[in-house]
Length: 233
Image 1 (tube, rainbow, N blue to C red):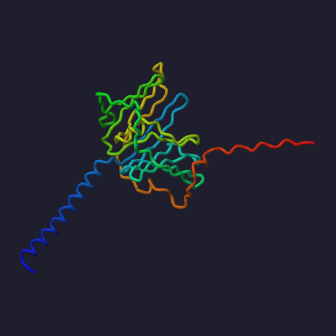
Image 2 (image 1 turned 90 degrees about the vertical axis):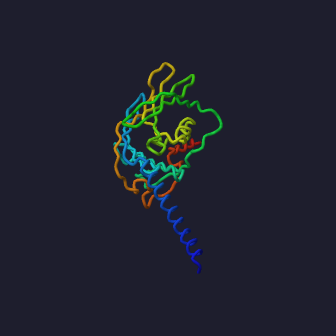
Image 3 (image 1 turned 180 degrees about the vertical axis):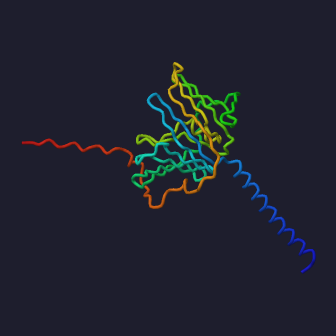
């Protein structure tokens, strides 16, 4: 084996080690940029105010009501897997939904303004959606390193997500305050993050518990009673 061949082989080994080291550093930096912790979120409409706990880690979000009950639904949003899961704890079942991560070609009405603000220590951009019927004012940040969600429960009738929400999340925004107003300017609904706490979280929070059965979303639709047949004489 010549000295030139040995040097060439050594150079390849060193280059491979350097590439591995660079990849490890890049992955470490990405992890550090991604927020990990717990948020308290308040959702308000004209009828009631609800509090939710958002656990966030590496592009995954766990959403659950602060006042947990047997009937409560837990939402698991997994951006890396492009999936959303609904845990029905009382039944030990779960529903799987594909995330809508791509934005269609049609206009969504989402417009970014030049205004910025700091909310809970995070720089936020202002985004607006205006129509003849309503207006939505959004203050969202990209400093979490992951997109957010406004999903707090799954209604039986629909799984549709507004196009502007899909576009907002596709841009990597995490909303910290969203105000919905009707045509008269009255606040018809609000989504707001009240507190942000950085802390280490276990991966188990973002997994489907063992033994849970996968079911279709139809299980959430109440079964209609079969009408009784009239007796004939």
